[in-house]
Length: 214
Image 1: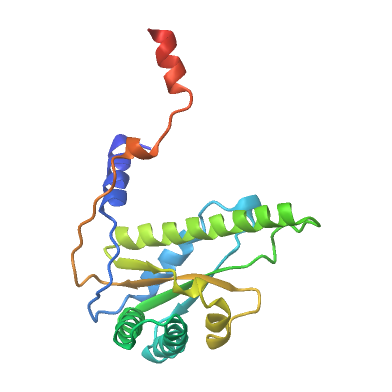
Image 2: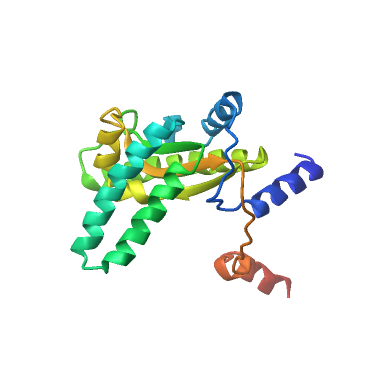
């Protein structure tokens, strides 16, 4: 990788934003296909590629999912005892975010090709590896979309209602929804901050090396 290519990627990673508002301009099918084809080149445990993508492009399919999820959200928040006006704002916001995107990609996990173990400890580790693989594919999809000039936003709501999403979209039984990635041409600009990276990093060997060098 040349320095120019590295610099380009660093700028790409630094410039990615969670975009929630999009224009009405559609995402060309060939571009969407390219994004998905690129995503499947992400790293995966044992190269089993446990990611699955359910793509919603029509208003009807997005509204069907948004309404089903909204009904469950309203019921859950009501059971929590939250104020009705707060609940309705939350439901309306969720509906708008899903239906307002030209494309919604439901990112799913499938365990059918992963290893199977008799004990719970290794089964859980195998599942965690699969979840990590799916997350990396979602990140690749997002960065590729950003490189193409698209905006995107990750919504974790399907984790709270995976069976509902699966049933509403008539997904295969092994497809476990992990999140939604909304896609479209940005209709907003966002800024973001990050904590200084050294505050999140601990170099286990560098301290000893510095002591030796002294």
